[in-house]
Amino acid sequence: MTCINKGNISRRVNFQEFIIAMTMLKN
Image 1 (tube, helix red, strand yellow):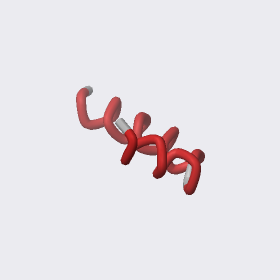
Image 2: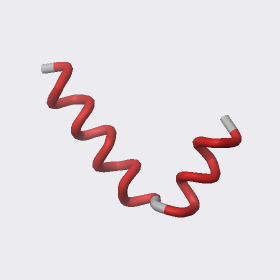
Image 3: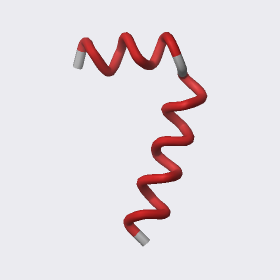
């Protein structure tokens, strides 16, 4: 989970967009 944490600090907004994209893909 260290890699994910590092990415979150670098681009937190991108993380939110990623979740939205995943939800869209799931639907």
